Amino acid sequence: MTSNKITPIILAGGAGTRLWPVSREETPKQFCRLFGGASLFQTTLARVSDDSVFSAPIIVTGVRYASIAEQQLAECGVLPAAIICEPVGRDTAPAIAAALLASPSLADAQNYLVLPSDQVVEDEAALMAAVATGADLLCHSASHLVTFGIKPSGPETGFGYIQAEAEALRPGAYPVRRFVEKPDETRAAELLSEVSTCWNAGIFLFNGRKMLSEMERYSPEVLRAVEYSLMNTQQTDRKLFPAMEAFAAAPKLSIDYAVMEHTQNAVVVPVDPGWSDLGSWGAMWEHGAQDADGNVLHGDVLAVNSSGSLIRSSGPMVAVAGVSNIVVVADKDAMLVAHRDDAQAVKTLVETMKQDERSEQKRHTGEDRPWGRFESLDRGLSHQVKRIWVDPGGQLSLQYHHHRAEHWIVIAGMARVTVGDRVTTLGPCEQVFIPQGEVHRLENPGNEPVELIEVQYGDYFGEDDIVRLEDVYGREEAPGTEEAA
Image (cartoon, rainbow, N blue to C red; front, side, top):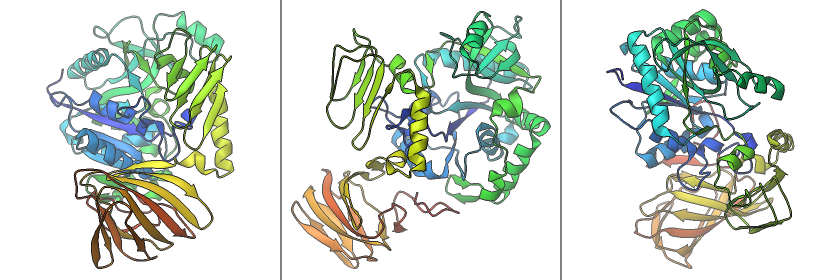
């Protein structure tokens, strides 16, 4: 490998609507723990954790996801070089341009590895070997823009394709002959008849200054808009907030459209790393551990006389009988039943819910926080009831609310509660009332979790009605928005 370390650029701004109800607008699939452990974002971080090869990553995500990205970075013990908080999604070309222009290493002839954060790689060693091949190529000539082509397992219509020239530039690396957009089934089958065909995984390796020069040549309007947005960026610690108006003016283009399909320097390194983009429940079924009947079962579920199905529950017990090739996904507040291979129908459902302003499209009933988590139990016109867990040593911010009063009832553990100037310790069955507008805080100074019921009274219960005065986790309102981080 090159003696210079590679800087990862991790793209974490996608929506993942085809994996609803697990993936939702406020917690998209890259941040979901789809397999019960680390999130896809965290497994991507682990992929580039070898500090002998990689430097600190640059994270590009939406401004609304900055807090959850920071939380999951902290869980992994990763200190990023920067977190670029896009004010609006404009696809991968503006995202990559922002990461490069904000990179402290750009002037050092640095190489960058772009990784989507919502993919599964079963054979990490195979992918890293391919990255080493690409890095070796850049060692000999920094002019190449390397993409990694996945060896296809079938005629997939949901991916773009890459076709390579027959003669290798160096062992394992081939000039790109052409990129092919997502084909129909007939065309996909035709493409597979050529041995040079790969799926386009959206993974790239390049010299940063070379990529910017190619953007200048082929998509200068993208580069100008991002440059202007960064001239007026606001910064909080490692988080950068590009200016909204200028960033939104960038054309919505993938890096493929903006550069890779035009450049004369594209090179593909074919690799077979057990890759999946998990773009649908059908892909989750293919990736999952299937039983003798071809079912993938997760959670409190039971399947009888059924086959080829994915049945998953994080809420109620789910039982199916006499069905085949379906998906049933149950959450605490929503359930999906669909044909296993009809990903577009799920996307249409989500779009319909968005039009109807259904909260189930946007958020889960529960959310993780740096101090623990909460779950919404009930909600009416003038009240909301939550169950809150505070980890040992955790503490909520010192805060107040414009629109609601709160009533806390401790059901487990010992909580230290601040209300105005008064600080008290509450145990199980003890309670406190917090008037609307009163400054307050909840802390867990002990070694056991604190659990409590929170009853809110008022006319608005959004998480953006949190005015933080002090916060040990460094959260604050994102510049230019009204949404709490």
